[in-house]
Image (cartoon, rainbow, N blue to C red; front, side):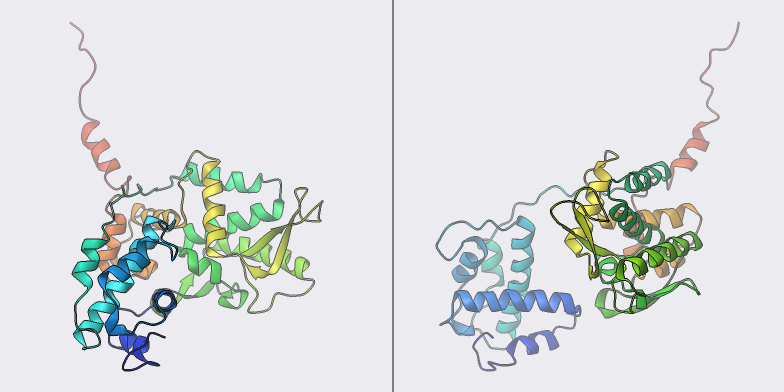
Length: 329
């Protein structure tokens, strides 16, 4: 814990006095950044940190070499430090406001924003075909299920990773999802997805040698093992009691996208595709907001702003009446 007037409660007090820091994941990550800062400078008190200390922590290793951390990681850590030391100055724990100096000393060159992908029906069909054509049948089934859950329920990648069998009610066709901000929601499962989950439940029963427990993961991890296994000719073994992590799911979805010419495919593209499909079917904005579990309708509007099919039909219909052929005589 950072040293200061409240050595055992300063970080918790920061969280408590900043209601915008609501997510348990954000609190864990930002608290970890501060603990690493303390480890870097073990003899400094809160009021003794300088902007140069924070710059060196962000951009250099302890031995003075430039950090190998990604641009986005540095930006995320800087955001936490700006928040904490801005608050520390406001409540009197630090004599100076380091936020402006930190932004000036740590300038991150903006990178082009990756263009969002919206999968069309033929692309979705191709992705599923690529999954089921995998040499490791179980791996292909798992990836197809992960993509289906994202496209048909709009689940985020951390929600996919945390999904357990106890969260599913296959008889009623619903799933209980703990989303961002620890918000619990009930999500409807389309009939074709319920059938896919039922088949996977039977496969999991065979793999576990018992019925899956409530806390057993739905989307499992795989490990490489020398030689062959009952799962695969490539030495991949299903770990039925181990969830597939967030990075594992991102890698899997990127790999499936690459097989159809979309190497940048990411889990959130599938959630955005879910929103676009709902809009294409004529659902009102409020219904889509509810399906996405957004607190603000403005967030939903941003999701749908670049839907490639949004105005396609209207534009096509408006131009269909143009006379393009040469008239006789």
